[in-house]
Image (cartoon, rainbow, N blue to C red; front, side, top):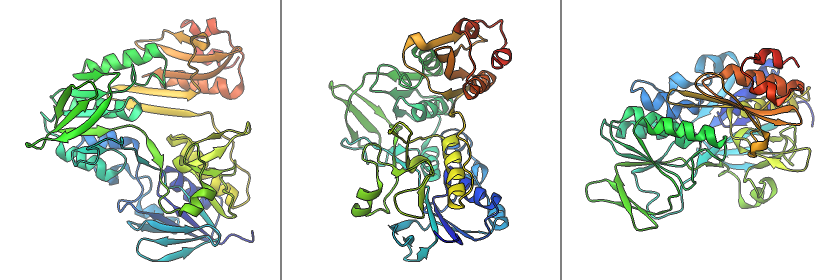
Length: 414
């Protein structure tokens, strides 16, 4: 492709904002256009289930990813509240909902994802909410009173974070419903999950595991009945679904979807340059399905990965050196618990090493005397040390990791 003079970034997400900032940092002087369907512009998603939900005076300005002053300083033209209706990747043209057509030398698709809804009767009732956008959080916050009865569906991090926040917001019992035996057990070591869940239940949360939902029925008084497949039921005032997200690509026609989307993940297929099969079209963040060296495809759904992929797309557009991939890192704030993870937590116990350090244990995943993952609660320094070990491929004995008398800062040097 010839000299790049214009870039359109579709999506004011963490990946999208990372991309526009990096373009300017790399001294790109051409035009940058930022497009997003959300009228509130660019804001952080994690605080939606915490700060926005808990603080009545908190607004999207408090969680902004980028503000108007910085957009002006970076000479970025923002189109908020006017989403993309159609993409033509061959001409690198987008058609906005307003009908306006925009064309650029490069387009970055950073449209993130949309919250999933369970495909059951009643899932579209007005009392059944999701938590993905600022307006979602406002809708839920406005419905909450001290005695609002809420059911949270989903045993992942979103479900756990929302449950923890609501347990502090409402004096009524919060119902936490999960189809699995134990929330978060697909993400964290079982013993740690048990302790985290027990902490939430001690705050007034009622957990129902192994539950199978049949349907939701609106009652005459405006409440909602949740019917289970065993014939039992409960009544609540609000339901919050936290059952995952799907890549958001409504601007792709069926024909273009067949060309761009990875069938296994639903994400936009890209190589390690964040480039799609169409010249000058890139994707980054939750919406991107990235090809790996082993032939697999991975779609990440966390902040650090979105940040890195945005930087990587910007560097690729300008044909500059790509940034080195960082050690995977993720966090989850659940009430008074700050959980951090790094690398990959392996499910098998033979690879887990527990270190009793403070009130909460630290878990390391170890293979052949190499740390490949770690998770901690209210102990971020332990995960930072693990990240150094992973990055530097440090040889460490599992017995040393398990010994709290041996400082991690010493072990991370090998």
